[in-house]
Every structure is written in structure tokens, then in C-alpha cells.
Length: 535
Ligand code: PEP
Ligand code: MG
Image (cartoon, rainbow, N blue to C red; front, top):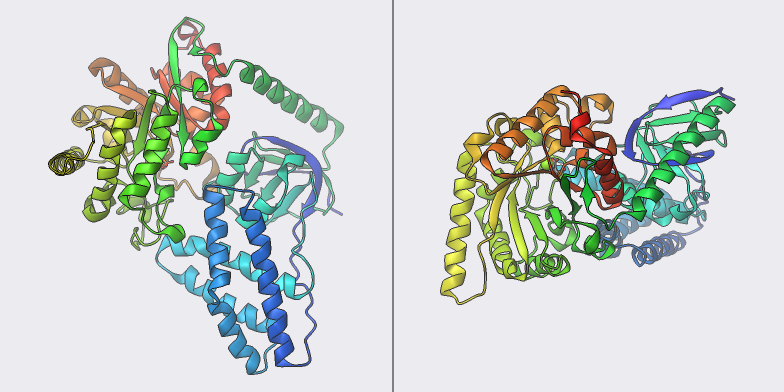
């Protein structure tokens, strides 16, 4: 038995959980060989069918990105090529278990060796399929996570995360993992507390534990003092949330009477269905890369038009800022992004759009045609030189002329830019060809501190409250105020109530935040008074 410990990780999804530790079981389940190859083959088919049925039933309960992941897994299982390859090995004398393991291991190795980051990212989904079928073959269902536990694992597959009912409490502490992973995104969307990068410390299965996924720590065998302090923090957080929720539909006004606009960040158009429009001042960032890739490939003009116009109609005339595809870096898109040694510094965002005009022009036409449905603004990601704005504008103008001559309804939206590359934040005045600025604190932080945003080991280096980052944010806000160019911030820093004083103190009055953070951000705005800030 190990003793009390305070284990530190990185916050992937904020929140609190208390419960016994549930250690993921690592040993492979035992498999009993059958008497004939025919029986082995039959056992494999049954196991694949049962895995497919499990995935299909989870798919019925989720939507958006979560259902894309499961769709990929189901398509892989139903395609039959893994089963065919395993059948060949079974005919040559292998057991179903050994054959399935060998076929999937080889496939996973191939995905992992790929230079294409989107293939690499898919290898975890394939490992998930492998393990689900192997468990079914051994007659055991995949180790279930009991309700209300703090699940400790190396990493966790999206399908496993989705098949568990988190509404009964509990949380996740991952030894590796990443704040930018699929699972981290799902945990944030569902409000499941999660920390990553806790390392290899020994932890007892069943040990009493407290997960503070606001401070980023797991307290194992906590003493009475730690329990009291944890309860105090958790109760305070719940009270803050309740108070904030009560005022979520009211405008956000600082103590000295200044109005602050609070907009929302969305990805899937379905996200909008869960947000009452009265709670927000519009959409400050719609990430469109989630429409691209996956099994559906690159979306055509009509598909994009439907997605964009749905959000514009939902917004009832409030502004909707749709970002053109920001693929690359931490957001690879299969069949679109290209293999590079250093994708964060490579052909991503607007650079890739300009390099692949045949894809960009489809998105441009869909945006131009969606514009009449509401107050559309278009935002270009990863701009690093003014010439990129000029080129993008020219393409918008050409496509608008094409639509006009074909008699197709359209409108030219305002075209602004993300400020997330230091070159823009240092000299914003060179970028006044943009109609507005929105600061991307996630990328700005990683580029200013030279610390990759998806590396759990760099922890504290990724903080947007670093004085160098704050000074650049203030520089952009100052320029915005002086020149009259609308300036907002849509990175994760805006969703962090602890950062609100810093951002408002820097002069920002327009923030775009994660849906679950609207209420607490508005509450933090109401606590702010300009006169009380240190000079
Ligand atoms: C950012 O970089 O802060 C941002 C909002 O964009 P993304 O997180 O999608 O890169
Ligand atoms: Mg970014």
C-alpha cells in the first residue's frame, strides 16, 4: 500500500471530484483457443459484431465530434478488411485472438509511423477497436469504469470515455494524455473534471482520493485538513456557478458601469442548439475545421452553406464570426493537411488555404452565400503578414463577382483576422487592412513562449498570464482603441475567470468564451472595476 500523496498534473477540464481511485487494468484478458479454425473464425465474427453493436449504441447517445470518432471506428469494423486479413491467419493455424491482435498491431504501427498527424491521431481510435474486440473474444466485456470513481489510466480512448455515464460524478487523471486530445475536448464539453500528465507515481487501486481539476492535483489518502480545504474550494466553486447561472441572461457590466460583450465559441453547428441566444452577444468564433475531414472528407459548398446559415439563423441578427478553416498544427485534417516535420510552424491556417485555393474557394462561396442569413463576419486564422489579408480579400471579391454573374444571392461580409502570431501582436498597425482583430491567446502563448500547446510536460510554460503574452495582448487592445478597429479575444484565456481582470485591465471589452463558461465569465466581469486595477 502506498501513502498519502499530492500528485500534480495539467488541467484538461476544470472541476472537482471525490471518490475511490479506479486503476485501469493493464493485463490482457485470457483467451481459450477453440478446436477448429472454423470455430475460431466464428468466434472472431461474433466478437466483431458485438464490438460494432456496442459502438453503434453509444453513437445513438452522442453527436458532433464524438459521433465522428465512433463513426470512424464503426466504418473500420464494418469494412471487413481487418476480419479478412485475420481470417487468412486463422486458416494458417493462428487463434482468432492472436490473428486479430497481429492484424491490428500492424495497422496501428503503420498509422503511428505516418508523417500525417491526422493518421497518427487515429491510431488511438484503432487501438480502441483492437482492445474492444480482444475483450469480447475473451468473453469479458471491456473493464467497466464504476460510477463516481476517479479513473487513473495511461490515456483513455474516446469510445471508452463516451460509453461511461459521467452524470453520476467522478473524473479522470491520466498519466500521459494531452489537453488538446479528443478526450480532453469531450471532457470540457461535458464538464467532466480531468487532469493529464500525472506521470508514473504509484497509486493504490481503491484509495480515497480528491481530484481538484482547477488547481490540477490529485490528493491520494487526503488528511482531514486537505479534505476540509478541498470541500471549501469545491463548495465555493459550486456557489459561484449557481450565482453566475442566475444572472447568465443579463448583460455583463463592470462595477464602474462599462458594458463588456460576452460571445460564445462553437464548433459543430449543433453546439448552438444547446445555448439560448439570450445568454450571449453572438458567436465570437465558430471553428470550421470540425466540418472537414473524418469519414465525410472535405465538405462541399451546399454542406457548408447549410452549417453556416443554421448558426446565422439561430443568432437572430447577433454577430456570428466564422473562421475560415484553421487546419494544421494541433488540428490536422485527413486528406487536406500535409506531412511536415514541424506542423505548428508550417503550412497551417490561412497559409494552407492560400496554398490550396480549390478548397478555399468552396468555403468562400459558401460563406458569401450564407451572409444574407444574418450578421456574418469572416475571420482568417494564423495571419502572419499583411499580404495574406490582401490575397484572401481578392479571392472573396473574385468569388463574389462569379456568384453575381450567375445570379446567386450572396453578400460580402466583414473580413477580420485572428491575432495569434507574434508578428501581428507586435506590429498590429501593419494589419489595418483587417475589419477586426480577435486575439487567439492559445496560439499566441505557444508562439511567444516557444512551448507547444499539446505537450503536457511543458505545463506552466503555456500560461496566457505570462507578462510577455499580456503585454502583447495590451498592445493589440491599445491599437484597437486608438484606431477604432474592433478587438476581441477568443482564446481559452477569455474562458478563465481568473484572467478576466487581466484582460479587461489590458483594455479589452469583448470576449468570446466556451459555452460552459459564459455564466462565470459574466460574473467575473461584474466583479471588475477599472479604477481598482494596479497601474
Ligand atoms: C487560439 O489560438 O487562441 C484560438 C482561439 O484558436 P484555436 O484554439 O482554434 O487554435
Ligand atoms: Mg489558434
